[in-house]
Length: 398
Image (cartoon, rainbow, N blue to C red):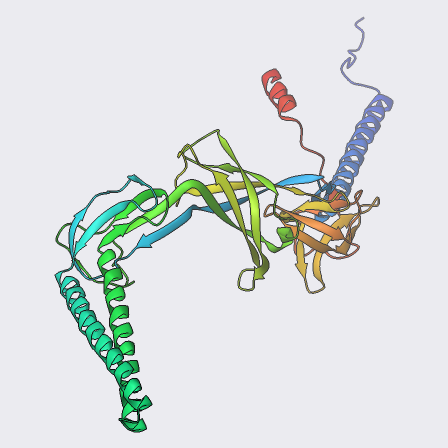
């Protein structure tokens, strides 16, 4: 007999149900995992968004002012003595003896002026003086004779007084003629243009045959002489440093034409008053220039060593806030909240400013504070930047 065939591929119903439950459980686990992941991601996104909404700031601590500091100001260099040389008599330039760059001594002849009109006036004045002297002598002798006649009652008192007055008038005319001769003699001497002091000729503005007009008019200077053995340097010191700049103060001069070299100079006097237009104090320094290496009219950098104040603090200019309440800075406390502090400024150094009061040395001051920053606002403090050496090492490792 043959046995009936059986279905070996069919599974019992209990096995099928078990597989179905396993698939259902896996599906439910996957669905729950996906829901949990989305909820977690949404929570992290909300947390990150809230964190990013808090502004991130960079802070720094204020610096103490140094015990002494260097103040650099521009200086105007001038000759110790400098004067334009004008003509005191009119005529034509006969000859000149010195040109630009020529050293001269006091009283040295610079040029001669030919003035025939003055010569003729001088000759005429001498002749007039001779006439006045003769008239005066005649009037005096006549007066003496009339005095004798008056003693013998030979003439009247009126006639004697007339002769005395005439003698006095003739003496006055003689004195006037003598003064005119002296004046023209001086004009004659002014034909010789001489140096008023030891120095060097820096300008010659005339030439032979040029018409010379006496007097001090613009463009009429014949020469310009300067004493450059010593130089004056004028500096305008700002008001905050005016009190510290006193005579005897030492400084160093720097010139672009002498790189790497300094020239010591001394403050000799100050104006003792501020210019009300610019609030600066004019200061005069002097520097020895016996070697002649420095030139008047050049530009100098004047470096002063002024005393500082350890009681004051300094902040960079990019930490300041200009509000309606005045000049303020933003500080961050230990709980990362902002506090606005009003400060009293001192000297302005350009890139930094001195703070006299309103700030403590251990305050964390916000750099480049945004305009929207308000009192009590939460902030995030940015981590300090990595050193350049460490950053380069990381780049090489990567």
